[in-house]
Amino acid sequence: MYNLQAQSLLKRISPGQKLIASIAVHPSGDHVLSTSHDGKTSWTDLDLGDRPYKAFRSESVMRTVAFHTDFPLFATGGDEGILNVWTGKVSPDLGEEPLICPVHVLKHGSPVYTLAWVPGKPWLVTGGLDGSVKLFT
Image (tube, rainbow, N blue to C red):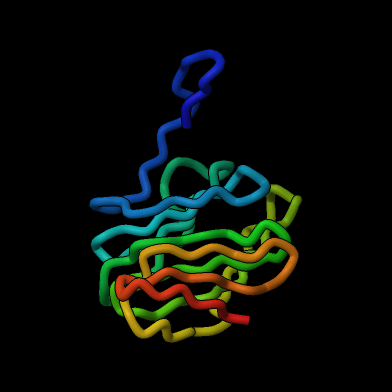
């Protein structure tokens, strides 16, 4: 984390991954998700330190991750063509750990290179290697 105004390093995060493919910052600013080419997705709680709070494994490269800004959701996608949708509820109480649970597995059909949440709705838009754009509602 780097402060552009002061031009100084604030914090270094060590997600324990090789070749990070994508990162997403939770709307609260205190949590970071990262995906990597070694099939890992890491959740780092910045209040707990610079190491991952939770790590998830996949059989293939994980290329993209995104938090929803209005709902306690996040999603990951990768080379398997599968999207994993999770609940990622963060409590304002610093002593309480985030609630992270799998919600749904969606099949895109081709490797997923990008994804984005629709503001105000629990809808997911994805872009695949085959040039397709899909909306999951």
